[in-house]
Length: 157
Length: 86
Image (cartoon, rainbow over all chains, first blue to last red; front, side):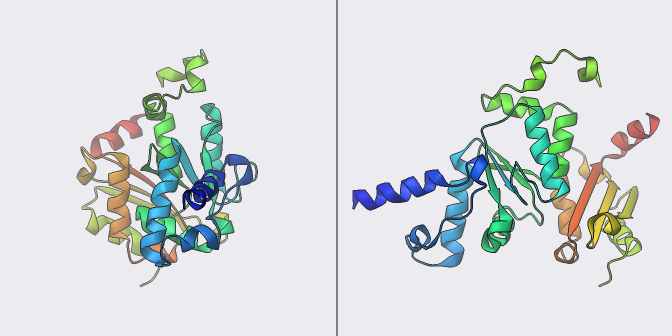
């Protein structure tokens, strides 16, 4: 029994690392949640958003965003020097695409989660970036924004 | 239910008792029904961004499933005044 639990955990760990884009796992892990689409998926999504400090759901991947808004999220994270985050490509999985909207009760992609909590979409992230809130939120997660190391007078805006 | 800028503007105005609403149809940029809105309302006071945006989403709950891309800016009357001064 412990062996199969170990395998499920390993599958969880494989999800969504930036480079591979990441999708909901295949039949193996879903079967473990007794097949009930609704309940099982909410739990899976809950696990996904809590597994990493910074989690984003995008159209496309960080290397190849397929949408201007998703790209904006990727660029903002890049500006702040956030490199280690989980990115899930909703275009790879229609169930994920709808599921995450139901989970956060938010109608659009991209979606940004910090510390397991839904923060908002591109608009909100952009405003947080502009008003300094993002630097603060990252600091709370123990992530030092790269912008703090830049000595420009943009901060006074 | 029609999806015109005027219709959305009116709905937001009523639903959020807004002081000022701007709705821009950005469909041509996005290749599918898309809008960008600015809403100025006292109802946003004291509310963090996410809550404000959720208020707008709720107001347009019927329409949003039919809108492909949606951008929103939510300001309190005070923020709006300050922004206009810039």
